[in-house]
Amino acid sequence: MFLGIDVGTGKSAAVIVGPDRKVLADASRPNNANLSAPTGRSEQDVAKLLDATWRAVCDLPADLRRQVRAVGVTGQMHGVVVVDAGGQAVAPLINWQDQRCLEKPDFLPSLKNRTGHILRTGFGCATLAWLAANRAMPKQAAYAATIHDLAVSRLTGQAVPVTDPTDAASWGFFDLDRLDWNLKAVKKAGISEGLMPKVLPCGGRAGELSAPMAQTLSLPEGVPVAVAIGDNQASLVATLSDPQVELALTLGTGGQISAVLTGEGRPAPMESFEYRPYPGRRLAAVAAPLCGGAAWAWLAETVQRWLAELNVPCPSKDEIFARMDELGAKAPDSLVIGPQFLGERHDPTLRGAIGRIDLENFSLGGVARALARGILTNMKNMLPAELLAGRKRIVGSGNALRKSALLRAMAEDVFRMPLILSEGQEEAAAGAAIQAAALVESQKES
Image (cartoon, rainbow, N blue to C red; front, side):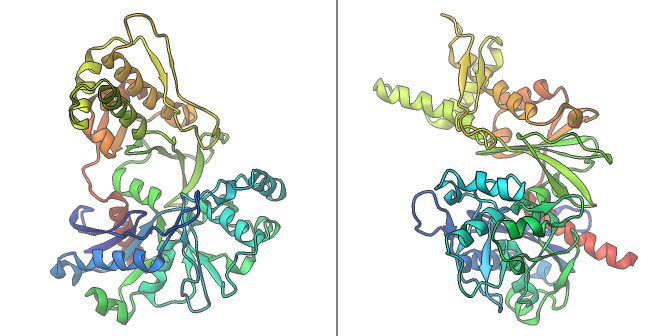
């Protein structure tokens, strides 16, 4: 048995995976960790995040926990927590949703000019540079870590956090070729080099489960704990059975389209996607529109709002979604909708648009069909065509995709390949558990 832990933004989850990669048990706990902060800032209570994590583990069946042979950990990427020399948090987690780096419009452009790296607000190194520039770095600060790097430190009883390439790259100032920090950029950003955690190989051994944590979690003492992995890559590990021919498509509130690179070369980068390290010293190209499943929800919410304004009895949102599916399946392809209602990370000024409207085609079915096609077309266009060539199927996940037959049909039509839905649950935690299993296998071989 292998334990996987996911320290998420709204909840923590834990799973136990058997030797066949199948999830045998899962549990989750809401963390209620959000802190009151000035508008645009997003901070979370570290103690509450970790408490929810340990509680989720303890909710798993005790008989399975006693059989665990290794532990893998994942969690929310990009965010950063600062700890002291003893490994204790001296500030809240500043997570991926934080917008403080946009408070001064010239901050990120200036950071790019000094370092040569394009960072976005919420990225760990951008946050650290902001803390340094605004003299807000805690005096006791000794190291910086992701929240799941900190969870690994607590599991192993080690004060000094370590990280892996998947998480380090999510912070920025990372060299994808050397798989290590670009310390020149770190220094030019005004960040103390000593804050940056040591980068271990993806899936490497971070340490062993300490006696106190083994007792707290009713797990075997001394089992290996893998270095934490980013939740995007962990989800891909769990969902892709053959990364060479599969695309991963997620549509929840947001959305992601991911392709693991299969060869040595890589297409030239575009602003619409980024390369992220992937287990096995590979790279994954990942595009994440700001308005994925939320664009689909927008149409149902608009129907509800219009009916309320007309004082007409309003069906539930689920009923509207079902009707959108039904009518959209029959409607012709006449409208065109760009779903960038919230802009995009590479162009915040973008907005949604509806085109080719005539006097008859602006029906609920026509809008639903065009919106579904627009959501999937936008995601496809965010990746280079070279990365889509040779792919044979899409592995889908996320509630929007699971619940909408029209979105699934449009995914197959737009990408010109079949879609299969992931059978798993808590994919990120499952991927972490699979990483832990791979660590045990690698130790056997060595």
